[in-house]
Structure formats: C-alpha cells, structure tokens
Amino acid sequence: MDTQAKIKETVTTNPVVLFMKGSPKFPQCGFSNLATQILDACQAKYLAIDVLQDQAIREGIKQFASWPTIPQLYVNGEFVGGSDIMRAMYESGELQTLLNATK
Amino acid sequence: MLSAAQLESYIKQGLPCDYIQVLGDDGTHFEAVVVSPLFTGKNMVQQHQLVYGALGDRMRAEIHALSMKTYTPDQWQALSR
Image (cartoon, rainbow over the protein chains, first blue to last red):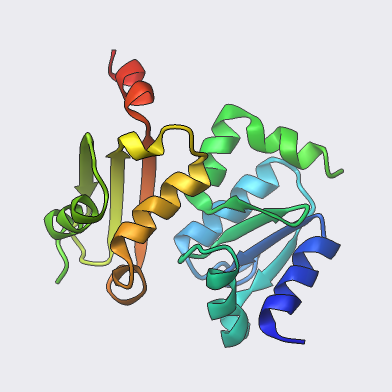
C-alpha cells in the first residue's frame, strides 16, 4: 500500500487521529504539545501517530491535506486543522462538539 | 536569517492583505495576524492554506513554525470596534 492510501486508511478507520512530532507523553514540538493538551482537555480518545518515526508519513501527510505543517488533526476522516485552528475551535466550543459526536 | 518583516512581505506578495502583522525574532518561529478579502466565505483551513500558498516552498525550506490567526475584513472590523 502506498503512503497516501495508508494515511487514508488510518484516518477513516479511526475516529480521531492526531499526526504529531513525538508522542503524547513526550511531544517533540511545542505545537504538537499544544495539540495533545487540547485533545486531553476535551477528554478525547485519539490515535497519535508520531511522524518522526516514519519519514514517508512525515512527508506524505503534508500532501494528503495540502497542509505543510504538523500537527494535523483528523476527525472521521476529515482534516480539521493544525494547532492554531484546534485552539480557535476549542475556545469557541466547536471542537468539543465535534469530538463529543465521535464518542 | 529570515526576519518578520521579510516574511510579511512574502505573504503580501502572494496574497492581498487589508492588514498584516508578523512577529518573531529568532528567524524560524513566527506569529502572524492576516486579514484578507480573499478569506471571505472560506473556512479556517482554506484561509490558512491561502497563506501557506503565498509562502510556497519557503514554508518547507525556511520557516519552521508559523502560528497564525486569519480574519475576513468583516470579522476584523467587528474585533477592532
């Protein structure tokens, strides 16, 4: 399976997926750290993919969403945004609503 | 080293902006506020993609981190009122 197909499968078979640098316990970047904190504050269950472990995913995910940066959040197969958008949606309550619908 | 002023001019070259402010003095981490008429009717993902589009390959090569807030002219006017 090629990288794009692999990413597609991952985001469609898991309701909430965060592509990040490092792990939720040991984030390797401030923006990835912020993303995990926001998801935790929403009490969301999510699959975290560490892009630093896989160079093909790290580059492939940028093409997949036409989005040049990491972290990236996907809910029900849809690209939601990076950490700026996650923060804005958290502050408006939109993110909680979106994530609650997956529980 | 890339300066906030350079980054600001790169964005302005690729995207019409009513207002823009870029901060950041370490050469790799920047924060931007961008107001563009092209944002009207677009969601946040599409708005950020327009800014990334204006930066093109620089986003990959020169800029490690760009945190941004995007507003339509109407949203911006409501905020500054």
